Amino acid sequence: MIDFQYARANDVADAVRQMAADPTAKFIAGGTNLIDLMKEDVERPSRLIDISRLPLKTIEETADGGLRIGALVPNSDLAYHPAIEQRYPMLSCAILAGASQQLRNMASTGGNLLQRTRCYYFYDIATPCNKREPGSGCAAIKGLNRIHAILGASEACIATHPSDMCVALAALDAKVHVHGPAGERTIAFCEFHRLPGNMPQRDTNLHRDEIVTAVELPARGFASNYTYLKLRDRLSYAFALVSVAAALELEGGAIKEARLALGGVAHKPWRDTAAEAALRGQAANQAAFAHAADLVLRDARGHTHNSFKIELARRGIVRALMQAARGSPQSQSNKKIL
Amino acid sequence: MQRTRMPHAIQPDHHRLRARVPEKMPVALTVNGVETRLKVAPWTTLLDALRDHLDLTGTKKGCDHGQCGACTVLVDGRRINSCLTFAVMQDGAQVTTIEGLATNGALHALQQAFIDHDAFQCGYCTPGQICAAAGLIAEGRAKSAGEIRELMSGNICRCGAYPNIVAAIQQAMGRS
Image (cartoon, rainbow over all chains, first blue to last red; front, side, top):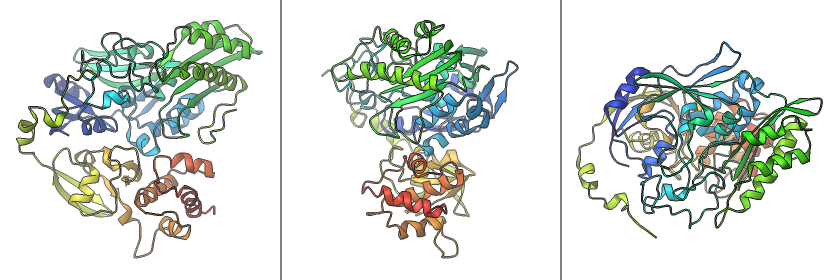
């Protein structure tokens, strides 16, 4: 780890000012990803601006019946908040499917959105990586790519976004509130993260001198028919090979509204509104779910070691939609998949 | 394979960076009930501050990347990985380590339960396991053995003592 300066931000405006003044500075909140990346020499900030004491730790009701979650609410507090457990249980499940309780106690809501990929080559500074070192090449495309993307990848990058929480937030139509030198703006969740294209060094559309201040949930929480199904190499404390956030609103056995987002398959949480549209008005049955899965995976492409993910995702989508339709969400402690 | 970036250790600017005299910063921590004042570099992790500056070597450095849980301590009553936070970030915090769990010479219920159930072999992960279990019990979320396993999954035991660890935690929870 290189040496760096450390300073605390007094308020949000001060944080933005400090960041604008130093092009190699980084914000730090929970630190669980950034410190790890600094130990690996992947991130080498000259200055850390500690935002962890800013007053962004509340969860508040919004005027239109939703919730505004402060960017510094720890992941564990968010997952266990009564309003989240009751009104947005899919979000609670997704958070508890990720990391460990120690890490969830440390990691912030905003930081979860901004965590970097766990691609082995991104982490290994002895190998080329267009995300870490633009223009150097992608070692994963012809390398060990079992954990990599099957949707929306490019010739420059096949990394995946590692978050579980973000998959649920994408499905729930959340919004991200950010603050920068020009004031505040709001970014739709599905516009927050980017596909790699030819600029994989940019994970999100957040500007470097902007700070995430809150994540907002709309009123609709899908608390009756939902699931978060995470498929991974060990039963707990592992990143998703494929995960599925599925939520339905049913009316007499027919699908009135559907939400479907996948994790572990792309450079961003992969929400497919075409598949959701195809589900609307259909009977909630296996045939409709299989058709939706085909739609989601219509452009899926495997690499040397990860083609199995396409069939895994197909079955995961169908199973998740079945769980949602039955009203029997995947347990995050009993790992038997029903 | 194309190789365009040298490992950091041999990059030309490395010596310049390391040659700068580190600026130490004051940190106040209450560790196991004792107020302590330290001066540490900003990049000193809480784990290194405990082990190298306060000689509290009960907290172990396993992976140093938040993957094994051996460094688990309680900060303001919540379990965290002490390897993934800088000591300067914890200024003013109450820290409890494995050395702070026993009271007046009597073992903490978890320490006794780990002995009763032979919940370790080499013992290296044990301080982290016990601190994590103390956090788990305080959270009050785990009731069944399955829930204990899930909420203890951030602590790896290389010897594979998991069944006995779960039994020990159940005993300490009063559910043996």
